[in-house]
Length: 328
Image (cartoon, rainbow, N blue to C red; front, side):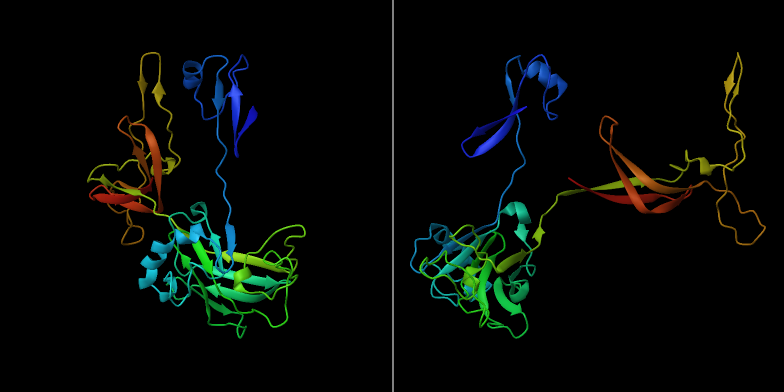
């Protein structure tokens, strides 16, 4: 197998030859019928992505933020901090701003409200934490207790779009500084602010030796399900192939000879009907415990097995309906 690199992407490929090598995703029928000797069979690598952060200075062009204008204004019913211009959050079109883009591969369909947490550590000590504790998108500084800026709104989160916009411009500590010189090469150190959150880099451009960051959130994904109802009517499904279904110490060996083969017809089924009194044999009734249900397609192929957390007792005189949910 070899790897071909085209532009910014890469993919594996195999040339069909006498070695008959192929990918696991290619069936034998497809390998022999769809490809001629000398053809190139291509594959793909798993998709990857990363959380990206952009910093915009005052008045800087910001096409990505401008593209979110209608989205931000739409969420004004949740909080005035979403207002694109002249709102509680300032003017997103020109103010100093930090934008963090979280790809949907990390959270699925939407970010769960109330689960977002941004933490800033300085030499391992927590100096600031933001949470959307009101579940309305406002990122409020909630910790550490009594820290500078506690209770202030430092930005908003777009749950469906996967964006975090930060404009908190207050110092998180009175003495701590770090080398956020990516913003101004003439200044070597800055006090930590939420505007500088998630600032990373290497070399002389941005060392940031003392600060570390954590972004926590939970994603939600709607999984389509199929609901199935399986019925066991009276007199049905009251026999089991489980060896414990019959009384122990009985011979199961059938009679066989040169002229006949006959299974034993005097096998006694174990009576598990509870007795009202001790030393009194209750009236026998076929009883089974349903623990698994097989799911078959139209061609009688087994496509799934549903296991019950607790087996259900079914008597011969009873009908049982079991509800099954199957994720697709």
